[in-house]
Length: 91
Image 1: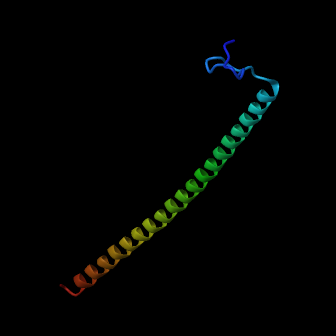
Image 2 (image 1 turned 135 degrees about the vertical axis):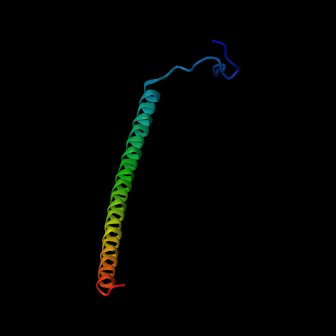
Image 3 (image 1 turned 45 degrees about the horizontal axis):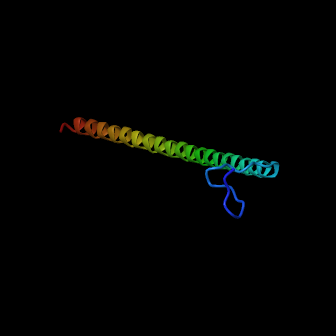
């Protein structure tokens, strides 16, 4: 192996991997995986909350639409009664 005067390997050479380094790297990877899983779970919870919020908003819209239909029906009924009264009065 080509070395400098201080016996460190040249950059083009790969240092030998020892079991301690591999074990440490494996632990780092496990932590990264756990972090990814936690992030995914957080995002799933957020998605679920947003879906629930969307469903609640859709329900509110449906209730408001029913109120509009009810108001329109009452308006049509009132108009029909007015027309009936006017017809009865001969107008």
